[in-house]
Every structure is written in structure tokens, then in C-alpha cells.
Length: 131
Image (cartoon, rainbow, N blue to C red; front, side, top):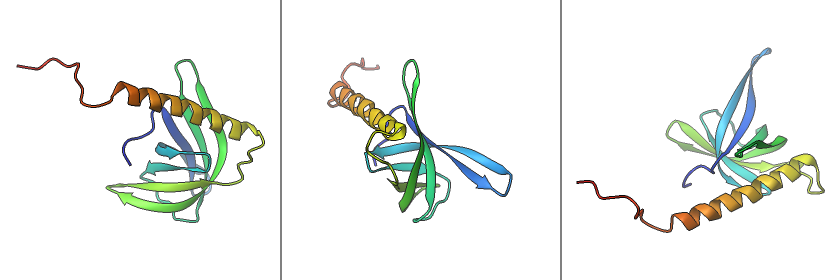
């Protein structure tokens, strides 16, 4: 895992007892049409289901894919956090609004990553040497 995906977070709720819920925001490290990898300090076990809202920050608006159900398939501990591999379940590919927005997020993400890789091919050369 290199670094978090740019301008993209996963939001979800954790229930604490009967009446209290906590809204959590987690960084995403991978995303494709079948699932994602997110990092959070919240504890899930393989087999748990989590409902995600993926939010991509754009210059004038946000793209939101809401109500995406995911199955936790793997957990790896990293310092005080965990990386979770999550497989999307019940994502129909025949044009529901969630799957359409998820496709749009992946398109924008792909463009951002290709722009970033073109901008930073190697060592940074534009900085003046400090004396």
C-alpha cells in the first residue's frame, strides 16, 4: 500500500448500543469495480458487512455513491490501524445509481492518477538548492 487515493473517502456508521451511532470517515487505498481497500482504526472481522458511502471531492461538487454494501474479506493490522479488503455485494451492473456513481468515481480517479504520474516522473527537480 503506497498512499491513500486522492480526494476520496469512505464514510460509514458504527452502532454503539441501541441509540448511539458514530459516523466514521476512512481513507481508501484501492478501488475497483469489485471492491476496495480502506484504512481505519475501527475493528471489523472478516465476514462482517459494512455499508459505505464513497465520496469524491471535486472542485465544484462531490460525487457520492451511497448505500454500497461490502463484505469484509481480509484484515491486516498496521500500527494502530487496520487495512480492510472489502468486496462489494449486490452491486448490479445494469445501471443503478450507486453502480453508475461508483463507475464515475473510478473514471475520475483513474484520470487523477494518470495526471499525477505524468507530473512526477522521478526526483523533484524544480526546487532551488538551499544554502
